[in-house]
Length: 169
Image (cartoon, rainbow, N blue to C red):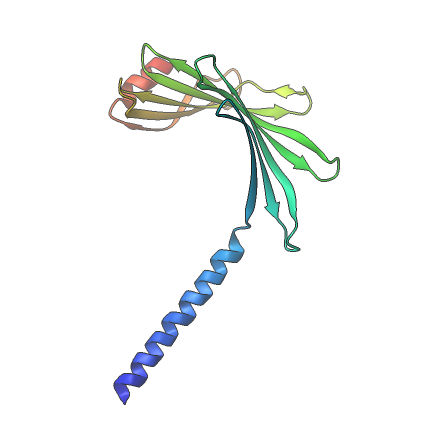
């Protein structure tokens, strides 16, 4: 009798804890709806809508992509939806450059400047270096405090991190 009561209590505790953790997970992250536009198999834009408590979806984010003639990503512009003006507002721009000699890709991050109505000079960047067969060798992340500052290593890892940091300075 004691064994079966203990088993029932143990199973009940497990079920209650699982149910409460499942309900926390479902309410902590809002569901999203994605609308993706493609041209010739390449994603050119992606709109993200967020579900509200009423069940309706509202516009949230938009990503616009461009590509190089070789089909590699050249840029990603992110915009946020403004509910007051009912328009997309620029947020940030990531530009991609590729160096086939050193097998590296550089991503520059620039934020939108409302005063200048343009994207500022990049203040962060990431550099990925690959082997000839596209395996990742190293990754380095850099930041600038001001436009005049030199690039400062924020984080780096990999087999060849020293080489990547030397190529960037």
